[in-house]
Length: 64
Image (tube, rainbow, N blue to C red):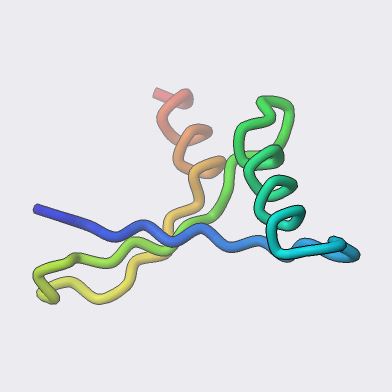
């Protein structure tokens, strides 16, 4: 299946859209930050949006 994954974050006090994008990318790739929560949509339209908490998912996978 094909999916669209949407990750959102709010960036405050950026001087421009480009600065906001750069700051978001930094936080997205900075390893000490918590894993994001993302919305996943099926491109075929047969599955509604599913919210996935990657930090919670990682914790669950380590428990077994």
